[in-house]
Image 1 (cartoon, rainbow, N blue to C red):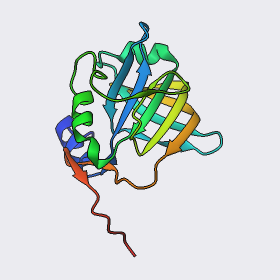
Image 2 (cartoon, one colour):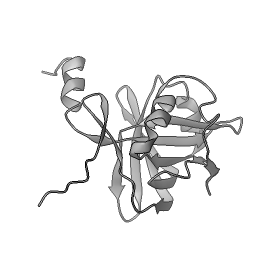
Image 3 (cartoon, helix red, strand yellow):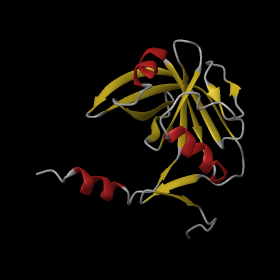
Image 4 (tube, rainbow, N blue to C red):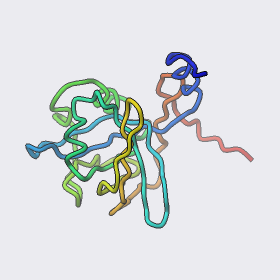
Length: 163
């Protein structure tokens, strides 16, 4: 027996995740981006990562067709950017400082980590699709605390570590 979708969502909310902007380039050459917290590593050799995207996302077809994407890991300073990219609408990159990566995807220059990828595989994931990307470039900045999502809210790391 499966839990109802609200109970499942609430239970998943107990698992803190990082927040990212996954970007690509649309068929018209414009940058696309969406806020994603379903991101993680798959393999070190070869370097593979994954993220999932709702089949209902307005940019879904563009991500499938692009064959590439970049994952921008957000810091605590990026709450407004995360909220902007989580809201439906075009031209999300307007007013957002960004660079063009080696893959042609938009990158946030102040992201705490960036993974540029070519799409290795796409798998069915129910109401989402799972994108597996082969990392062709990875970079990170020392310092900066990650933006977290927990219990349907943005959270911050307090800097303490366990012993």
